[in-house]
Length: 499
Ligand SMILES: Cc1cc2nc3c(=O)[nH]c(=O)nc-3n(C[C@H](O)[C@H](O)[C@H](O)COP(=O)(O)OP(=O)(O)OC[C@H]3O[C@@H](n4cnc5c(N)ncnc54)[C@H](O)[C@@H]3O)c2cc1C
Image (cartoon, rainbow, N blue to C red):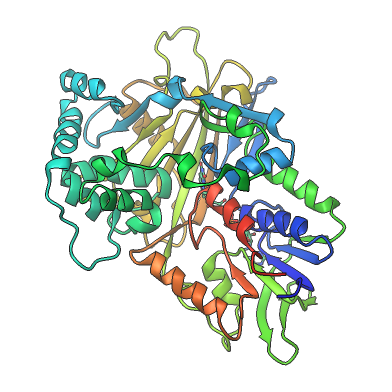
């Protein structure tokens, strides 16, 4: 294929920014136009530094992604190429925030540490809520002995079906549903295993039916991919003992630096506060026609859509439909940032040192009227205290998701009620917060339904054939992976067959 004459990147979230970054380096003489509906680039990444009290105390709040895992090489590469290493804030694997994760069991009071080693599993049998340890121990001991039980002929299933088959229904509810709440704010009974936890599907294959044995036989990460394909400098080495990381000024650092970089590139044009109204392929001149809310029509030869898939469906000409853009629903999540002052009179910390806790699906399912629908709470101060004025305690509560499935937007949050539920779950009283910020994130996380990967393969095949011939690439959280790492990787991968 000849080098693209001009490229339009639709959507300036992390996927679109990453796409524009890599395309501008790969095709330095091609005009690249990035168009974003909101005036602020970055999509769901929203970091904000606020005053937490009437004095000078400041905290960094996140409404979207807050920490990343260092296995996302495409993100490490951006950090290296954009010279962001000095801005990193890392949590070592040895820190309590990396080692201590908790569960709140609906109906009980107080949170329970999830054992993270065989010894801890055994000692958890003596803990006040021995049910957790018992479920974990019996499920893990039985799984390798269980017959191969994947139904013949299936090529996907729900996360819950997988955990139930291999580890039992109680394990699936307690641990599987909580894990899915923490990442997707979703119901594990509705989410595709292969699209969300492909390593589990693969481990079961490798272990000839046993996922645990499969994990023990897992290839090492260095055997899986070549280090040399990413420009990482010594960053991977520096991140060897890191559990998660962010930036001193939050995730917005990555967005702001990408935006500044792109603004300086002579071949990149950036439009924000401009909405794509329509996308059409003109077969007569083999160009796309992209109309915008600023009454402009762009005529690029190649297009990258980094829009949410339902949005792409809205703008796409009905003459050239694409399959599966609206199959998945989206989860709506309310994120509540809470900032407390340290009370000099209280000896009890507001939460134990650790990453935070998750709440599994209640036994009787998601009852809309059940409290605030808390999915989990992150103890930000345990991992990112260096972002804030010392002496503050920062927590973030996530609620909604499957509790409000079907609603257009998350309901209003009753903060006093939320605080008393939180105190009950933490098993300790909470003082009045110094600062509360509520973010209603409507339709923010795509929920990959069972069969998602096959549908995305079909989409890919359609895009590779007439009339598109590979000149429209569709990427973004709705396609193959919602994490920041997946999105940056997807942006990095576009245009490989161009030029
Ligand atoms: C609350 C929350 C917490 C999360 N936490 C984590 C985390 O801790 N770690 C992690 O790895 N991931 C996390 N994620 C996931 C991750 O942040 C997102 O999946 C990712 O940021 C999505 O990026 P994107 O660019 O694909 O989509 P988006 O961020 O949705 O960006 C799409 C962009 O398209 C623009 N747009 C839409 N319509 C139009 C139009 N018609 N014309 C022009 N532009 C348009 C929008 O303005 C937006 O900027 C979290 C997500 C949420 C919502």
